[in-house]
Length: 100
Image 1 (tube, rainbow, N blue to C red):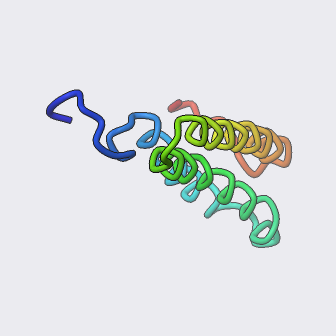
Image 2: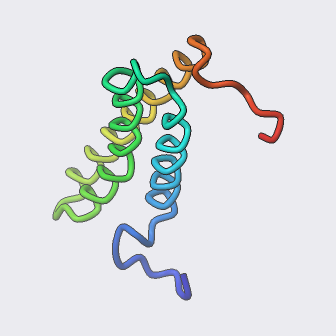
């Protein structure tokens, strides 16, 4: 960003990071077993998408109280996704990479 003014939600670093998470989760879950397509794959993708979506929607709300509530929903989606990632590791759908 050329200046420090935040004009819309796309200017928020947290929204951009949330979008990066979505793209990473889509790539990771593409290699999950086919039987997970309507289970863990779908759940992880929906939780990931919820993060930047709620940040963006909340930013466009009129009152700060509403914005804050949407941020809490996004935070809840982060915890949901974290839990699902742990389950994916436990099921050996994901493995830790030495490149991380």
